[in-house]
Image (cartoon, rainbow, N blue to C red):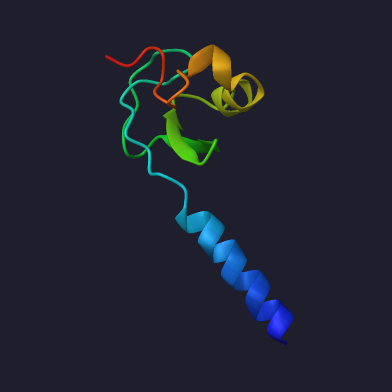
Length: 76
C-alpha cells in the first residue's frame, strides 16, 4: 500500500513541475493559438499548438522549433 502512495506522490510531483503554456503562436507553423488550443508538453513546458499534426513534430524535433531556454523560435 505504501508503494502505491509513493508512486502516486511521485507522479503528482512530476505533473506539478510542468510550466503552463504562454505562447500565442504555434511553435511549429506560426499560426495564432489561444487558451482553447490543443497543448503538448515538451521538456517540462506546455505549448499551445494550432493543429493535430504539430504536437508530434514538436516532440520529434524540439530543437528545430525551440530556443535552448524553451522559448519558441518564432516568439515575438
